[in-house]
Length: 222
Image 1 (cartoon, helix red, strand yellow):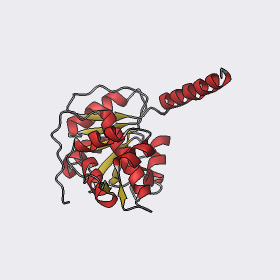
Image 2 (spheres, rainbow, N blue to C red):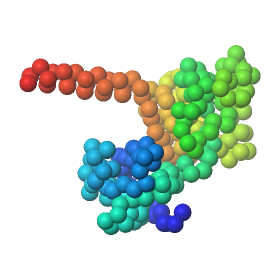
Image 3 (tube, rainbow, N blue to C red):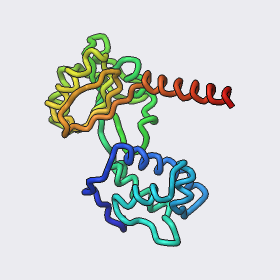
């Protein structure tokens, strides 16, 4: 990579990181038909502003050339590096219920840079089962600590029942996990140095329903 990426900025917000992932998704598509893109074109596709695009990208370094924009392929490389998906990230999955089994059988949804390397569950009927999609045998939760320490795993997907979420999350952190994707409907509380991203599908559907109704109501008022 020709340009050095600066990760030391104090101005990095969760919303900015979300936008970085959105830029990358757009650039993957743009790369199919364009080699260059400027901040205005990228902003239009994002429904944002050129100033916002430049501000977000300049947080990590200067990657464009004034008057010439960004090289799409190189910007993709840079954003993948910023997000850490230019290398393979190993994950464990904790909880082989409906959500967990869906993820394993459709692991392509994880996207570039991520690989589920082991699956754990406390249910004796599931332990020893071969997972669909990935050639992995479900292990018992009592084997989780040893596995995390032995293979230096630092990220996990949490897909257990919400009643167990906090206890299992604390167990994962104690074993050495530094980042958790929380797929339960429970807001887990962990030390600040642990990265947690929660995905509550029910809450997102509630948001979707609100905006759908909001649009309908405003249309009727026109």
